Amino acid sequence: MIAVFGSANMDLVAYVSKAPNMGETVNGHRFRTVPGGKGANQAIAAARAGGEVAFLGAVGDDGFGAEMRSTLAEAGVDVRGLRQVPGPSGIAHIVVDDDGANSIIVVPGANGTITGPSGEDLAAIAGSSALLLQLELPMAAVVAAAQAGNVAGVPVFLTPAPAQPLPAELLEAVTTLVPNEHEAAAITGVKGADGALEALLELVEEAVITLGSDGALYGSRTGERLRVPAVKVDAVDTTAAGDTFVGALAVARAERMSVAEALHFASTAAALSVQREGASTSMPARREIEDALS
Image 1 (cartoon, helix red, strand yellow):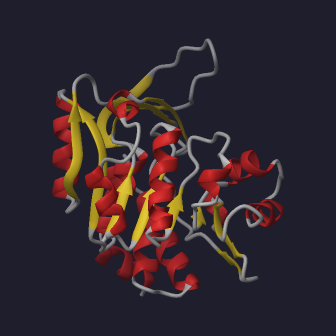
Image 2 (cartoon, rainbow, N blue to C red):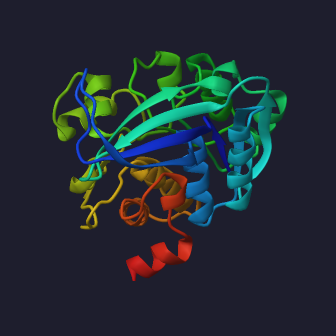
């Protein structure tokens, strides 16, 4: 079972020809609401990729919260660890341009009430085969969950987004760090994926830097280095590509695929997701991933 301790947001998505600059107003051509949040996205991605998944987080007592709970459950995610708190659920305002690029503003809502894992959360983490973390919950909660996973001998995957300083006690508990190139540079102060990877491996056991259309770069302290090319597709919406990659990667590693096989599996899942609009709505099923790999 894969445990995901993270955020659940309702994504408010505006589609535009060109994203506005500061102080600029542009006309959009479409709007939609889609259940998301990096935690919920990774949980749904892992479940659709064939994993048994439990989601640990919080939603508000509003309509968005009810819809997000339903969406997770319908994807096959165990939502017994999804608590309800008074007040609004988290939201993310997303602008997607005609090239599929996006910019995102997150308002935490219920996610901000999580100060640490509950007793039930700790039990779920200890009984899992992998723990997925992101940075849309308060940092103290993320650190506590990572440390719980580490103590229990559970591989801890961290997506360091939104990019921010990472405390030493968090990095010490992380098994696999999965930043994009921007996040890797922000963490290390090193520009260029190859140099950033070497700097990351001074902090964690293994790292995967996702490079968008340039694929992914993997390294571990054992000396292994791999570069996996991206599957070439026409991107429609890249909103959930990173979360799809991480969810699928965790499933592949839990199934004991080799590192190369797991990276190809995850890259293929991400490539399928960017060909569709939305976050949770774009994530491929296991059969789709296997068909694309065959």
